[in-house]
Image 1 (cartoon, rainbow, N blue to C red):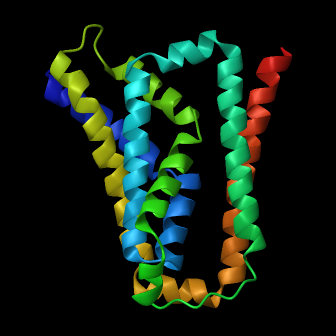
Image 2: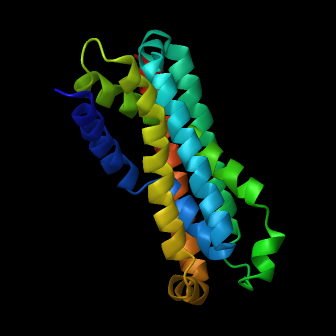
Length: 213
């Protein structure tokens, strides 16, 4: 099979994973609505960098390392789970705080760099991403992949992750979604906080049985 076809096949599989709703979707959409479109795009960029980082780690054999070093996998799960729970609690607690959004002024007050790092840390908080990438690579890469194909994968992952979340940021920073959010901020924030907290708790619970068995 030609390398280009292999790359497209892998890209399709990775795109399906990126589009699946999760903490990254919740975070980018909320940043885009509550801050500004540039902030949402900065968070999307952070998602792309985080995805490319995990992709390179997966290609370097992180999945095999995590399977062999049980405590490292457990530590990553617990660390990522605690971060998502913390983020969920913060959003839940601020749900009843009134929000006044001025499209231009409020957007300038918020740091795009902070949104970028928030997106990056959120992406890196879930080690399952690297394992997902590794499983796709194991299933679809040939036994001896060409060097050009290996070099093409990290930027492809970046384009998929950043591109998808840029679409999310553009959609949720539009006036319609923003107005809908402001009308129902309390419940939207509570749902978002609950989702992030539940995902973090699941990471924590998933890590415990592997230690007990």
